[in-house]
Length: 247
Image 1 (cartoon, helix red, strand yellow):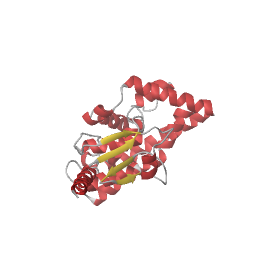
Image 2 (tube, one colour; image 1 turned 180 degrees about the horizontal axis):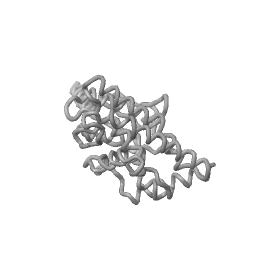
Image 3 (cartoon, one colour; image 1 turned 180 degrees about the vertical axis):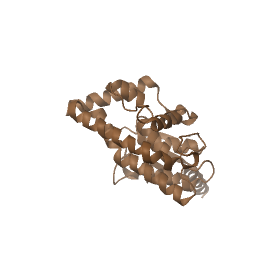
Image 4 (tube, one colour; image 1 turned 135 degrees about the vertical axis):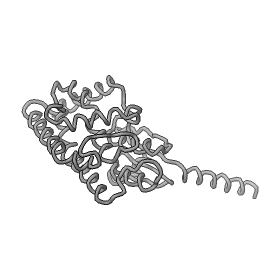
């Protein structure tokens, strides 16, 4: 009887710990995991980071994300949420204190979502292709990247930064979903350019995008979560070498 009471109290304690716990299953080198870390840090939410071996995924990860079997997965109250953009939505809706990752105004929120989605759908894969390819294929991919960046320069910035007449200003207090998505794609653009020997962000052609990325990189939260420059170079070199060896 006494042991049963002890076991019951222990289970209640574990339930309380699970209820209050935030766990992120991810990888330190993953831009998608970094999105969630940025969101959690901006909201000042304590969390436990679980480093996943992507070559040998844990049973826990596979149980939490049985459909895509991918990182990141956020676990809150023992319940898993997957897909980085949906996770950021969940974080913003669940923790109302702290800076808003999506504007409260419905129109501005729709614009932030639109441009975050544009970057995700039209820029992410082609930037990766530039890193993974060479020769004519790489030239075509780089041309497409620059075309998409010019669209953001001409049409995106004035909608993303409507409060400042299109002038990019980013702080820990104002960083939004679209800043997070852009950050995790191109904040290390200088490392990309060094490894590839190519110019990706030209301040003369896309001065607004150039200023936007530099403003993002100057925030304390991005500095805190950014890997050392030499480590980023090494990750990009290894990724590129592996990709080229498979092609």
